[in-house]
Image 1 (cartoon, rainbow, N blue to C red):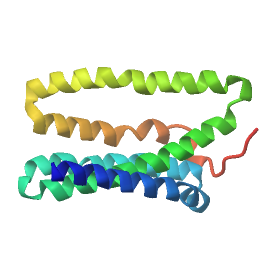
Image 2: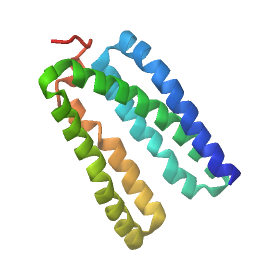
Image 3: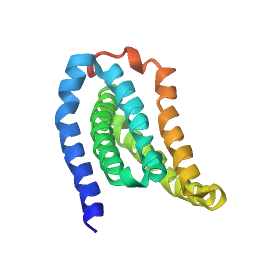
Image 4: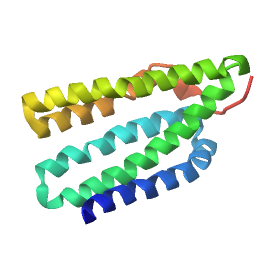
Length: 157
């Protein structure tokens, strides 16, 4: 129980720091580079979780570090992504756009859970964690192929 509490506490502290640092990061590097960098960093941090399974004696510090760093990156990404989306979406479409995004993001979670369970039953926990970490890592590729990396500021209109 103590270990679980430590992992969740690390995530909470990371989320707080990510929310505080999202604006200054955007102001320093620009919104596009911050979105790309935070998504890539999130994926790289995800690689710590399979390492925890491979090196059980170091599992707790690896999982704590992953939880902390991933929550930093999630908040940096989300604050800037939602701010950009709201700045470029006409007011009359904000509800529809945000509702669609929620449907896509939250609606895909049960599918991912089913696929993860199926994969875990087939190749086991370590292999499933590696596949999941790789999936998180390559999630930045659609951003890289878009115009987003060149966006420097969030300007409405």
